[in-house]
Length: 89
Length: 374
Image 1 (cartoon, rainbow over the protein chains, first blue to last red):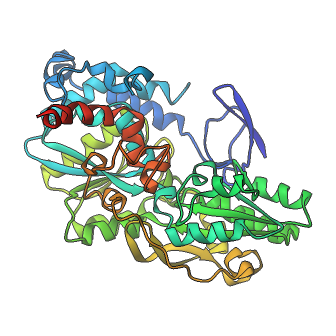
Image 2 (image 1 turned 45 degrees about the vertical axis):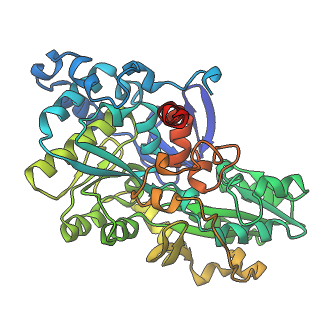
């Protein structure tokens, strides 16, 4: 068993399935068990590859083209990501 | 938080969305397999950022939703027996059986406890030697290592008053079942990232080949889902059908061998009935014979129970990606998280619950109201 810190909440987790991990590693935990070590090199490589998408794409209007496709155009894009306020229920 | 926040970057999301718009030339239907992915898609409004040609339908990967009504009724029957402590993951407690849910039984005096991990049940069993402690072992391949370990440890430590009611399900047979259905519309899959953490993705390769569909093993953060969608769409546009891994930071092709070994030692593959979907051959796990002393179905001798689903609930069609939650006349009206008709509204990972939690029932009312007024 070991201790895992979930963004401030510390819980005991079983490390039997990830015996190779060392103190300070990032792990994926499910139902009290660490199932996989987060591969930092892969994470960095993927992230770098994603960030290098063509500048053509990023120069396109951030809201313009994307917003047109939204099914409810009168709602602001950012509202899609939030819970509705209680008084709307 | 590291490895989470950077996968929620709005700037990066917009770049990938623009790339998706550039890639797509015709209509495509994709299915995200996992309930966790569905939740992320609805929470962040990812489906609304995609081109109109791309439809995301929601898959069967919510373990609570697909646990059969028979199994839930068996759980209720066991939980009501005297001297039983019935343990379960929290979201199973509100799933309606034929007659109420586990919370109702708890209010009537049954000893029902929520646990974070099945290992916690061993502690409960040791401190209550005069009681029989039963754990409701549901879940996909992701949960199997935890449940297998609890049974393995119970046998090793001689915890004889601990047993499990097993209702495990497996993803690849359910994907095959969806693709074989005459109603199927799905052309590509966002594969289940966390299931593959345990199992790897070798077993998806024959599926992609046999059904000629791209399968991209995908993570759960918005950037993961957008990238998985882009990878699947690129394959569809090119006419290829391979298994790709979008989630290499935690998934590799072989999975977690140690976990697989223990799962195979404790469980064996069996036919399994899925709620709303029906029986799928070789789509579940049951305990091996060597562990029969920890098999709650054997210990409590619960007979086959004849069950009936509410006729109005379309959760079976939602779980197979044939319909969406808002296609149901009851959604957001008679059926809400407080009064759910079916399992897809109960579990946090269910598609109906996700649509409700992020306010899509309000939009539905907004759309319907003028027609109703007329």
